[in-house]
Amino acid sequence: MTVALQQLRFRRPDDWHVHLRDGDMLESVVGHTARQFARAIVMPNLTPPVTTTEQAIQYKDRIMTALAVSGQTASFTPLMTLYLTNNTPASEIAKAKASGVVHGVKLYPAGATTNSDAGVTDLLKHCGAALEAMQQHQMPLLVHGEVTDPDVDVFDREAVFIDRVMLPLRQQFPELKVVFEHITTQQGADYVATAEGPIAATITPQHLLYNRNALFSGGLRPHWYCLPILKREPHRQALLAAATSDSSRFFLGTDSAPHVKGRKEMDCGCAGCYSAWHALELYATAFDSVGKLDRLEAFASLNGPAFYGLPVNEEYVTLERVQTTIPEVLDLKAGDLVPLAAGEAMAWRFKAD
Ligand code: NCD
Ligand code: ZN
Image 1: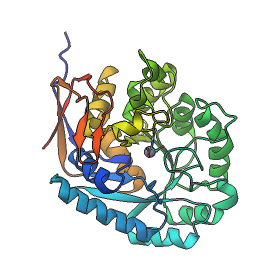
Image 2 (image 1 turned 45 degrees about the horizontal axis):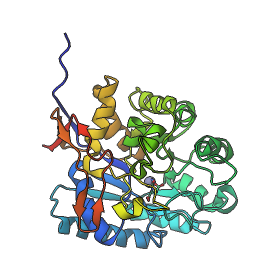
Image 3 (image 1 turned 180 degrees about the horizontal axis):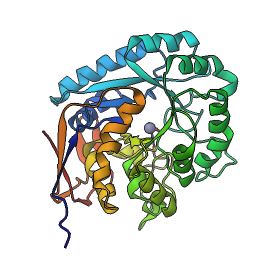
Image 4 (image 1 turned 180 degrees about the vertical axis):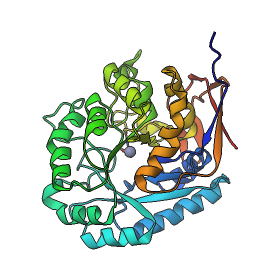
């Protein structure tokens, strides 16, 4: 007889990809992330986007103010990012590195996702000087890895991106640190596991737990719509194998992306799943499903800091095996927010030490 593990205690994790937004939404969600995570890589896709170190420092200040307002007292450090544009100068990269506040530069191919209109139209043509500076200063490039060519099927955009953009990029800048953000495919997982040089990937809870059937289960399900979109079951299994493998190249990045209920449930609804409220419980469910809870600490708390060159956290957290139900809706200052897998049962409960 095997007895299921009842408690899991491990180093406090970090979220290496989160959207905290601004204003009322920031005040509504920042406490959820700070409750579970010591640090988070904060995405710069505000309107207008965060393109300078100056703006990143101001945004960080707003995050810390919002955190105080939220009442969440856990210590939390936002790791800021810049939004790469066709015009990002090399001098901005040097400034970002020197600030100690900015920890990555985000590539959004123009038009790829929410607020990406200012994104890059041709990476190697326009961003050579910035990429050169990033390679030199060891500033990671965080990549939304999807082509935006309307002729490419939405389910194939990540795989095509590897051939069209990732390979030429990494051939030209072999020492550049690259995080392939929120990978969703077998091709993405295989590439990251086997490629040469400094490459890693984040994986979201929704891509570990669900395949594309979730989008159409009994009807159209907008709360499972995110970008990159959920893929077929074999891809989910490849991601789960990668996340729970011995490779230190895969780590936690929720891509928690809040949009109020009304902006999801409309005729042109926004992409993004909200998982900050229950992120660790979701990841634990995924790891538990393949009997790999022992790999959760490396994925959530060790591999990310190692890649970013930061120390691991000294505090610990605990997950208890207690059945809870995910709320149907969170009633927040910004409005109603539907969490990922709303209404479903969860086998785990998070507890800070
Ligand atoms: C993100 C958002 O809403 O900002 N949406 C999403 O579906 N993940 C943008 C992004 O990271 O692609
Ligand atoms: Zn994102």
